[in-house]
Image 1 (tube, helix red, strand yellow):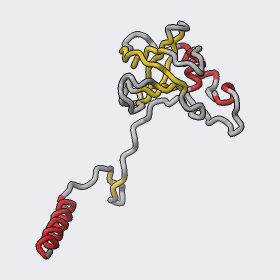
Image 2 (cartoon, rainbow, N blue to C red):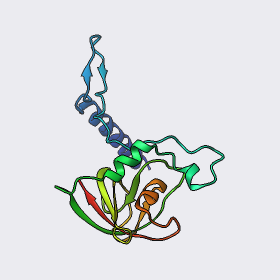
Image 3 (cartoon, rainbow, N blue to C red):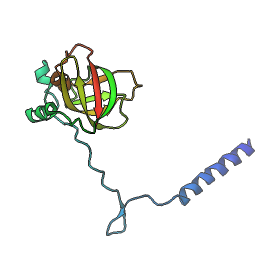
Image 4 (spheres, rainbow, N blue to C red):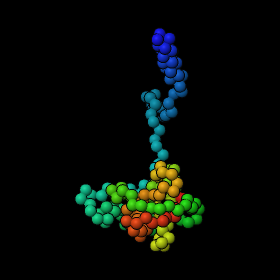
Length: 164
């Protein structure tokens, strides 16, 4: 029993020493000598739109993207330099989450890209967000993206995704 207690104390002291020897945190020194955190790099455009109103009932009510965002998405992402990620089955994602996005297992970081819906002959620029799923698990598509792709909201459209 005493041996176990001594071992625990030794491990605890060894852990404290490791903290004392660790390098100083990264940051910028302010004029007062205190360390300050570095600013974050600029985030990707998230196609932010206001949240739907609490009394939203229709697809039009929930789709809060503005005309400029819709026009930019329909104008499409450039095909030059786009890398084909693959084909995925899309399902309507949360209608309460605004923007023009697709959550997919085909990306691991937020990426600007393009979605093609061959059945309707449509193509739009989208923000590709990682879903955390395994490839082949399907994707969630925002209400705005489904509408712009002219995909049935209750269907499971087959989409082709490209990264910029």
